[in-house]
Image (tube, rainbow, N blue to C red; front, side, top):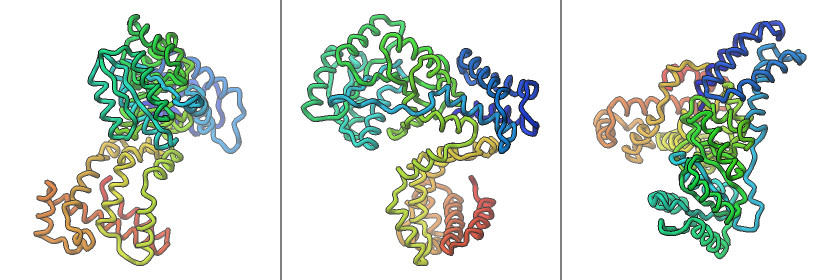
Amino acid sequence: MFDNLTDRLSSSLKKIKGQGRLTESNIKDTLREVRMALLEADVALPVVTDFIERIREGALGQTVQTSLSPGQALIKLVQAELVKVMGEANEELNLKAVPPAIILMAGLQGAGKTTTVAKLGRFLQEKHKKKVGVVSVDIYRPAAIKQLQTLADDLSLTFFDSHSSQNPVDIANEAIDAAKKKFLDVLIVDTAGRLHIDEEMMSEIKALHAAINPVETLFVVDSMTGQDAANTAKAFNDALALTGVVLTKADGDARGGAALSIRHITGKPIKFIGVGEKTDALEPFYPDRVASRILGMGDVLGLIEEIEQKVDKAKAEKLARKLQKGKSFDLEDLREQLMQMQSMGGVGALLDRLPGMNEVPKEMKDKVNDKDLARQVAVINSMTMQERRYPDLIKGNRKKRIAEGCGQQLQDVNRILKQHKMMEKMMKRFKKGNMANMVRGLKSNMRGMRM
């Protein structure tokens, strides 16, 4: 996420290191490069101009703390200004209303609005324990209604049916009445994609907004459209009085222009950010965490939350007890670890949150392939339970059978067996509680392992 911006800013800010103090002359070139990095990231020009001016004033007007080098002081300033530009803190949904609290979703066609409705429903259902209903008033695209129904059924959200022959206001009002009878907490209304220059379509959504009076009106926008996303959001806000923005497809956005432009141009907060195609890939937008990731500092807090939410604690405790009793780490245990990694978005998603990943050479990052996880799980699934528990049984003919059973090569089977051996050695060191031995083991294992 925002890889290009991270790389450019990191290389620009490195050049100030080694200076005795911050002066007009030694920050001039750095700020010019920061400016170019932001413009190349498709951040809106007014945002860039204000940002650079505030950095310059802050750098020359402050006394650098003795505990910080000039380079660190400038990075701290840049981080603080990135947070300001994106909105200081996460702004939660305001659901304080007589149930059902109505959330209206607006946006351009193709921005991922219908999928975001399902993601938001899942988020409110799982994280806030709300009873959620969804309805589509997109009478122009019957496939959108069917798509929302399929997603709602998969996530156990209450779906209210609609037809292209109905009026959007009538559909919404019927859904609200039905939601009240079912005692739902939240009703999310999905609308048709529209252009802000289409007067007829904008009149339709204005009438809908006035009729249902939502507590939240969220604009769903594709982050890869850069500063155009901010300009479109402003045009919608002028017509609809938005309460917030949902930024989609951020996992594919290497620039970050939309995230850095929207708050400044619209005055509206980014409330959520979509980081993948799966229905659990929606996160509250925390400006401080995103700023840290942009500067290559990672998001350790977000990583911890991800682990707490998605790692099966019961299985983790069971493995810990097993190792403490002196039992070995077998292939079934490795399979569980690989599947846990998959549930958290794969290796790439985890590495993206670790500090210092901008220092890792690009060719190394490119070797990270999350499809390998699925292949590794497939190899283990092709083994019998006895083979998983006693890996030493796996010799010649068994290896061939396993490879044929999962459609992989013999070297893939050998690779997973080698990986298991390394993990088993590491777990033995961990069991003995000797952290120094474990660190030494990790270093030696990493030399032999692919990323």
